[in-house]
Amino acid sequence: MTTNTEKRDVAALLEACRQGDDGARSQLLELLYEELMSIASLLLKREERNVSLLTGDLVNEAIVRLLQTAALNVNDKNHLLALSARVMRHVLVDAAKSKGRDKRKGVNVTLTQSNIDPGAADIDVLLLERALMRLNAIDPVLAEVVEMRYFGGMTVDEIADVKGVSPATIRRAWNAAKLWLRNAMKNDF
Image 1 (cartoon, one colour):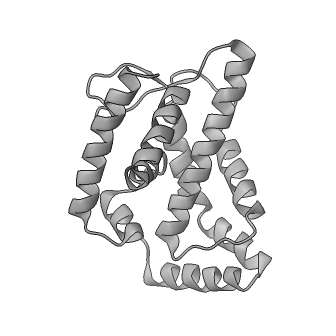
Image 2 (spheres, one colour):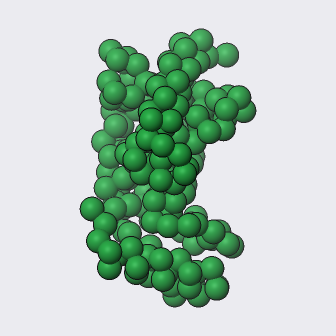
């Protein structure tokens, strides 16, 4: 749970980032490093096979990519975590593509029963990425919810806060996205 002091620290650092303070950007990421490590750990635990990324590698690569972003334009801590989830997703997809080129096959990830399909077997991360790209073309909001929920490990309430909608709206979007993704991955084209 975020304390009021932490919220003020994050808000002050975000404001300093907007004003171009690179030191504040680094302090902000240091403040959130443990939480980013938890998100990365969760993502990598879903991996069935060993990948060449460790938790620290995934976080560090995500931080490097975030720091390369010219304008880190985020509203609050949850928004920053959502952005971090997106970056980690891209890092994992890049790693899967690289490994696929090396071994001519994708990297499998396991989606928990509460995610895409109850009883589903392992799912190829590249298959998931293709399905998410198609979903994004159809409904960017649903794709964003999946990204924050699955890749970011964010709760329904946190996503609702970032999106500025009710938790019930996010639950409906999450359920619709899961159904769509299940069908899209079964019928990959």
